[in-house]
Amino acid sequence: MSNLPGAVENVRDTIEVAQSVAPRTTQKVKKKASKYGRELGRQLKALKRKHPRTGVAQLMKRAHRLTKRALK
Image 1 (cartoon, rainbow, N blue to C red):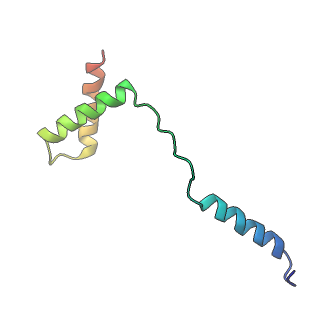
Image 2 (image 1 turned 45 degrees about the vertical axis):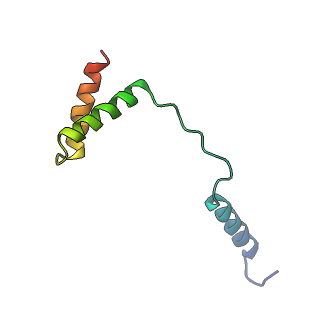
């Protein structure tokens, strides 16, 4: 043991940090895309094709409106 006070705690903290940063060994389970999410993706893709220079935030608003209308 070293002469530094709290040396053991520092080692434990280091081990905990190393374990939390370590890469996952199992695959993360992806959630199933909702009906709304799939339709929003379709609408956004179509809008991007028609208006490639328009900002994504503006297209996202339009895609949301179109998606709500399509799912009624």
